[in-house]
Image (cartoon, rainbow, N blue to C red; front, side, top):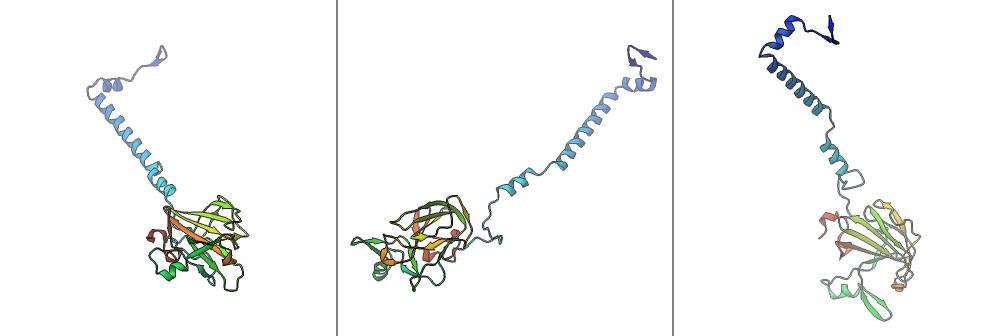
Length: 218
């Protein structure tokens, strides 16, 4: 029997709601349903913290080994140092070998000049993985390449020809970036590449860094 579109409750159900324990029972049932829903949500939602860790994790090495890269020589193994890095703590003779003469003036070498004993050109490679931040044609320096390796380590190359990279390129350790060339600044060195390395803006002796990770540099 309908009355205004509503149904009357059966007598037993009506009696149930009239009892004082009906409301607490309803509240308890609602609480159970709410807790169950929250537990289901926690189980089903993705682990945001874990995802963030994956996306924010930085690789120590691009070779997939999990080990930090150790700096390699940017020239072929047959290359020798024509001009060494000028070290204020070195012996006098070593300091003399680390001077560059230009226009009858001596300049302290801020890197290492590599040459082949036969005077020929050779491939120049990235000593560590990184991003090319500058590439310039410069007759005085013999062209110029700069690579940012991260963690404050930046390498620069002068007297380089047949350049294989451009600004913003990502390079891998050992990747060829050009060939040894000539420069006006150190014309007496012939065909060579001038290589410098800085850490947090401080010039370092590249020869003392080979075989070491950036975190080991002092």
